[in-house]
Image (cartoon, rainbow, N blue to C red; front, side):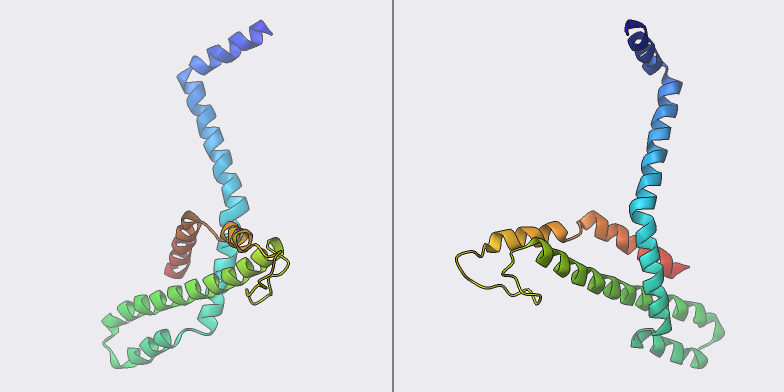
Length: 158
């Protein structure tokens, strides 16, 4: 046991070995995050963006309708603006889907007196603080929302 401890401490003093190990840890964490979160978010965003392209928001359709009346060199700018409206529409669609999932999760974990529409009965067994805590726990963090927005912008830029 003493030799293995000495070997581990010696290995930790080798900066190159330690650097490689840290790189491996970072790569494993990146891969896990990619599989567990980012990959699933990208798939949902691709689906949402495809749906937005199938039925674009009226602002994007209006911009497309103007293109024949504009010089050809302005078409790229119009496309970028239309893509921005597609991204905003995708954000609305994703946030709407997330709100529905959060509502489902909060009612599943919350007080049994909570109705599906979010209204709850006021009685002796009802604890609004517990319901609010369950809703907060189901809500995504600001960092997750920022990542989601970046992924949406990346998807719509392609």
